[in-house]
Length: 247
Ligand code: URA
Image: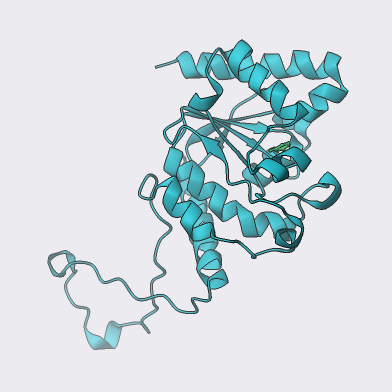
């Protein structure tokens, strides 16, 4: 990975983690000193800059479990979407899935059941996974940009996404999928931090923290526009299957 991208990723993870800690009411983080034998030679006092408390880095990939993340999320009230939800839709699937799907947010059925993609769009996604990719749905991991239903199924607002994305990033780090599929413009734009239209993003892999990410059409769009949507989604999914079959 390009070291500049790596650094940008690290900065973003750190910022998300600090925001998350702040949302828990933690105003100051303890300084973490390295073990004594790893300490460099002391610097003469005159050369010492004012010490800055080092932020605790974001959890490294794979160091926390999905259960840890769910426990941290708790009965989340970090954004106004909490007020209108019936259930938090955390995400579901194999904790070590090779393939992860990310949608934009729960709809009515998902809000009622507390599970992602269980309505009509979910039935189509299940078909894509089971019949197209030929994988049991339970072998994937499925999550959303926001975990609570936006009113009238509108797009999540930037503040809502900002409150929720740190949890999704931590879920991705915990699962460490080999490929991520972003379902629709909203998921693709928030995950890739871009305003580019889906037409410019789909049908090629992007980098998400070292993981190849394929943006494709949202299944709800495919239901509304079957001709364009089905063909395009299949073109994208074939690239995903090729990637998963590569060593
Ligand atoms: N649409 C989404 O983006 N996510 C769901 O979970 C269901 C529908």
